[in-house]
Image 1 (cartoon, rainbow, N blue to C red):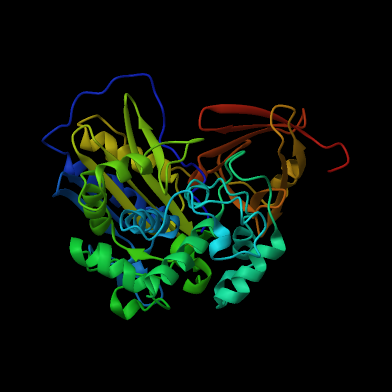
Image 2 (cartoon, rainbow, N blue to C red; image 1 turned 135 degrees about the vertical axis):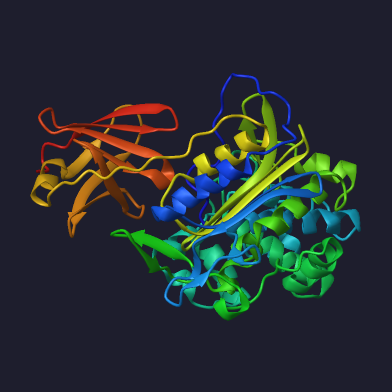
Length: 444
C-alpha cells in the first residue's frame, strides 16, 4: 500500500479562471494516446462536473500477455485510496453511536503498544505511532502471501511503536488495517459486506469492491512494471495483507461518483465531513489536501504492486478527477495536473519523448554512492544489462532513462539526475527542489 511518491499536485501562485463548460476532449485523447504509444501509461481516467461524467478514456491492456484491451469498465486495484472508504465507514459507525473518536485501542487490541493511549482519531490521522511494517513486506514481496488477523496483530505488536500517540504524524498502513478489524467486530460482518451495504450499493458503484485474487476474465486488471521498455507482470497483493488499508478494486468512473457523493453530503453528515477534512500535519481522515493554483481539493493516492491511482474533488466548479493505472512509467502527478488543467479550460502540453543512446561502458562513469549536505539522503547508482539504476538506503531501486548527455530521468516520480563525472557530482531535481550530491571517494 505504498503511496505514490508525489502526494500533492503542483502548487503555484497564479490564479485560474473558473470552470470551462467545454473540455478539450480531442487534446486529452491525444495526451493519453501519446502516453500509451510510448508505453508510459496503461489505465483509465475520468473527469466529472457534479454528477455528470464529462470525460473518460482507457488505454493499454488489462492483460498484456493475452492482449486484453482496457475499457471504461476495466477494474484496477486502488491501493491506499481504500483508506478513504475505510475512514467513511468509521465515521458512519461513529454517527451510529458504535464508536467515538476518543475511544482507545485497548478496547479491541490491548496487547498493542500504547493501546490505552491510541484513539480512533489517532488511527484515522496516522498519529498513533504504530510502526509501518507493511511497506517492508511489500519491498520483500511477502505481501503476496495470505495472513490471518491473529498473525497480523502479532506482527504489529512485534514491530512496536515509533513515537508517543499524537506527538507527530507518520503514515502507517496498520492504522487502517486495525480500523478494518474493529469495524468487522462492531458490525459483526466482513469488511466487504459493510463496504457494499453502506457505500457501493447505495451509490450504485458496480465496479468497486474488495475481494480475492485478480481475475482478468472478469475485467480485472493485472499490474505491470516497466523494465527494459517492456511491461513485466508485477507481484499480486493478497487482500488479507491490505484489508481496508489498500486492497480495494475500483474504476475511475466509480471513483468520481464516490468523490462527488462524499463531498456533497450524501454519505456523511456535515459535522462528520468537517472532521474528515480537518487537516493535521497535511492529512485529514483518510484524505490529504490537493493544491492546484488558487484552489484546494481533497483526495488520496494509492499504489500497490504495479497499480497507481488517485482521486480528487475540487469544490470550485464541483470537479472530480480520478485515474487508475496498471502500468506507469511517467510522473503521475503530471497526469493529474493535465486533467485538472483541461477541466478548468487551461492549456496543457502533450509530452514529447526522445531517446538518447548510451553504451554500457559509458554508464561506468556514473556508478557510485552519492551524498548531499542539503538533505539526509544517500543514493547509490548501479547498472544492470545496460540500464542505470538509482537506490536510496532501504528503498527499492528505480531505473534511470538517459534523455541527454549526463542527464537521466525517472519520470514516474518526476526525478531528474544531472551528472558531472569530472567533478564527481550529481544534481537531483524533483518537484522544484535542486540538490547537489557528491560521490563518495571510496566508490569508483
